[in-house]
Length: 404
Ligand SMILES: [Zn+2]
Image (cartoon, rainbow, N blue to C red; front, top):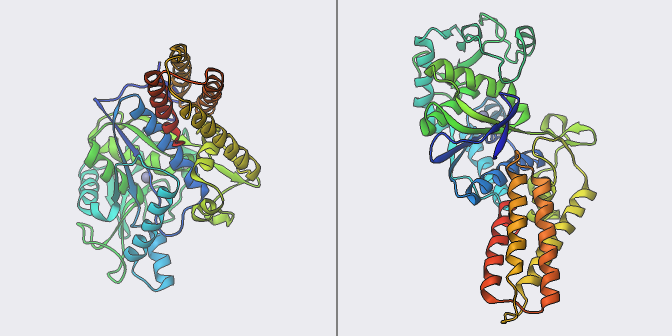
């Protein structure tokens, strides 16, 4: 049985998509700077998951948003004396280059927040009309007390929610209320709205995008675990309060942190390794093999030694397959090798379907590559049809990791 660990229910749940098409939404970056290996870890993890769903034959629609409207972008643009949206475009380009350099190819569409202002205003209006959001002199806020289920994703209680408030604003009714729209003077980036000129809050940008494409309920929403609160908690509140439909998302998937020297890799701590620098030293196969050799939910402590070791393992796998690939075709081939592939493929799937246990699935694939290489050496020739079948099936599995 295919099971995924759902952050909301805190358990593994059988995977059953809403419809024949699996809808996947993963939070993209706020484009005000270059991305680092922590981002790479998350985006590679979801790339592997989506590749695996497609390997199984699922039709998947995978959307990633790009946060190009945010205070951090406006602040940085002001410092650099440039336009916020121009700055965002520049870092969006760098982000897309990063994804390409890591072999991340599974995303169908990228959607910018700035292209969804009417949808965002529509959602905020809907929440105000339902009495769940209120306007003050600084903006429009989601009134958390109107949505009693608030906290169900993060598991934080009311006191903790109040303490974890992240926007200080004296006009709010309660500290945990979060902004849907902020009013700003006209000399900064913004749009007209029923509440005056201003900019949307971060959380509502993502629900406006995902619900426009996926409707009120969809399958998988992913992101780094640091997005659980407040971002994803707020997304659930907005969507479910607006539509009354529960659940907004069937499976919440979150990746573990990437640590470096005992601390989380983050821009604010100044300990980041940019993707653009990492790919000058390591190949995409090396990095992908490295990240896939940890379960996606586990924290990773970055280690250059381990990346190099992963690189050697990736090369071994590729060399083994090459050796098999170069076996001369002939009539003395054996079909027994097909049953070997059957056996390993079943194992590979069993691991992947246990909440994407990529470390064990990857080891299974590496073992299979070794046996294929032995087989090629021992038999010295192989039936062309058998060879073609084995190659196709091995490639399909290796492609889930982006290794061939
Ligand atoms: Zn998001």
